[in-house]
Length: 102
Image (cartoon, rainbow, N blue to C red; front, top):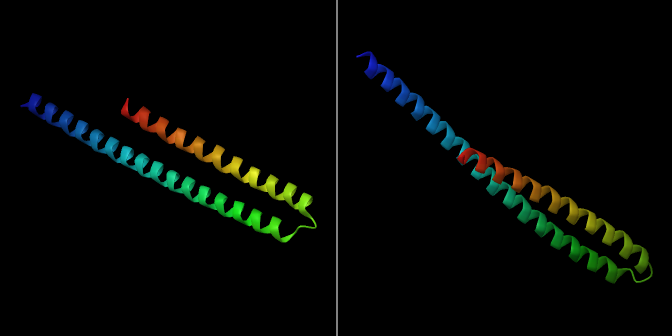
């Protein structure tokens, strides 16, 4: 009788652990999807920035060199920020998923 109760408790413990792990994996997969969506929005924002850059350059022939330098620097800074941060976040999430599966 005691052996049956011990086995039942072990089974319940494993069941709880299994469900807990599934919830964590589900949450991490959802987070990875959110990060990918954020990266996609950042890329769209970058495209808009490039269009703004073209418009400003076309509108201001007189200050072309100054505007080109400023806008190009802002655009490069923005691209670097988005790419480095998003790629790092995606890598962290993938690593967490791999650790959970191990």
